[in-house]
Image (cartoon, rainbow, N blue to C red; front, side, top):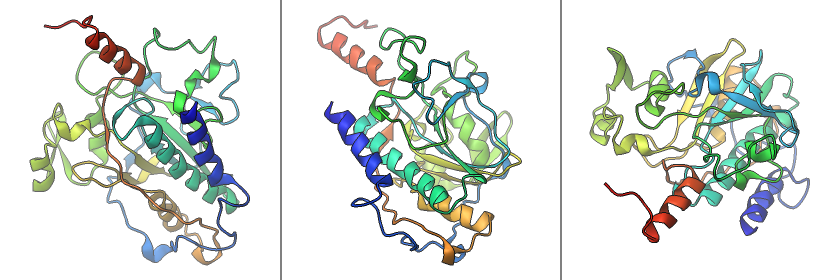
Length: 302
């Protein structure tokens, strides 16, 4: 219960009208067109790793009995924050999810405070798989199980919560492999045959070219800024070969630049970004069960 309370408190503070929130009418983050840092991402169509499995629920509907619906890009700007919901390697899952929830809430706050909700939508893409059916009730019985446990009870402050699971390794699945999803957007990757290799010695040394290596075990927060035509105009990636989490300032600054917003008239909250490590694991409950079985000698060993 402490985990629920901590996450809910952190998210609610971001939107509180007093105490937790900065004075309105000020650009507390100091973001302008001059501070914009182009991502260098390859401009291309936004894709989702889950393919035909990509579904969503809108904010305010998380507890409704209606099942998630297939997701399609709306005819508006969208800031997508892609972050896992159940991966538990590195920073504890509760702390990581609270950190990610605050980051996307800052973007949502920026959109709302500046009356941009008609032009810009904010969405969370959960790109890791959910726990198996053995560990959680299905959505027909508990509709808000669509939202990961440690993001309840309200759910994240977004327009859409999207479930689109990637695969870590190969295999037969409708989902694409994690590295295959990200590589087409990366400015330091080039297509070679059916795959991509890096043009950067740094990323090559870190293990970019080995899809099963540690480089691609880093499943952290990524941002995609997508225009109304569905094209990714900026994309900011965290912890790929480096230890650096991309904060909410990056997508907000991208919006200022790409929508030609007047920074002098914008309300922008102060943004503090904490680094964290987030490594791929099987979903939290699966992992807990596997570790327990191993401790009591019930795990299968080759």
